[in-house]
Length: 212
Image (tube, rainbow, N blue to C red; front, top):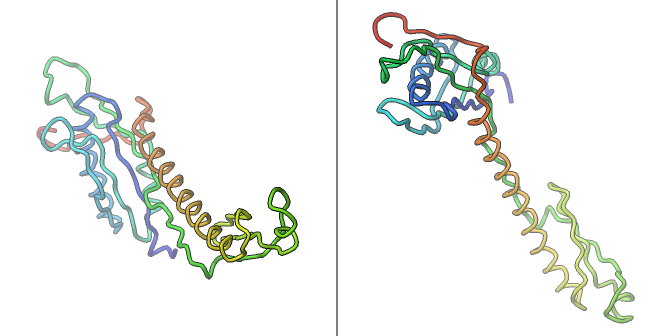
């Protein structure tokens, strides 16, 4: 992908923090989007999870694209801090509210399955089935080139039947592999919510004027 076409994803999360952290996500999001606009980077909200109060977010998934996407992403990756008194609890002295921002995978691959991408080879296998199976080479070894998945089927006496079964088995295994990758990507994204480390933020943002 060219520099002009770079596309990344960033998840900004309040983690398991109090309601003020969801409030901080919304405030930091404004700063992040304003920074992206200044740099000429496209920042799109892909998914938002509302917080406990109107106008707040537990998490926001962003798509970052443009020539400076990687540099912009690096400047907003890590622990972020919104420094302001709580708007909900006047008695608390805490002013630092932390959120986490991490790049994440979103687009999972879909492996196309075409018979033209499968190499079929007749072979002989041992085991039950008698002399006919070994001599006639009715077993099938099928290889799906794009994924490297290989299956061997010798359950039937006819090559054509084993070939049909091999193609179906290969298709199921390729689809199962895609689903496993998708589950891993989803799990990795959810794990980010538990990665919040309070203290030592890479950025500290504050209200400019007036109330936060």
